[in-house]
Image (cartoon, rainbow, N blue to C red; front, side):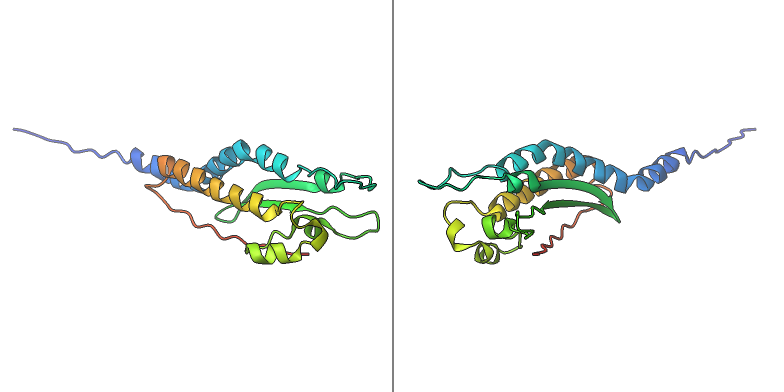
Length: 163
């Protein structure tokens, strides 16, 4: 007589379930690593002031420089990156967009908001932010592909708010 007993081991499925359950967290961890590798350079560039115009007597407050903030946070299905500057002038007005343009998603719109006296001297923040997002997405997609591509995909939507 020959008796054969078959047994199954579904523990590998438990590992997949754990992997799927932590997928969004893993995707965020990748995004956070890439963000952390780039954020300081972006903030340094945004905080750079051009030299004052010849003969200028204006005393800089550095509110614009100190107002730049970046953050990354988990959100439903992924994460959100926010870049903002809420600096307020001594007269109580929001002024970053007048100096460095808006962070609109179209360069022409961003440039149109910049005040005429700052054009050509102050770089558009749009250019720095756009370069960051392009580099971030390139590096994030590569890291995502190395670690998670067999189990999901990514989509990026960018929205700008002009205040």
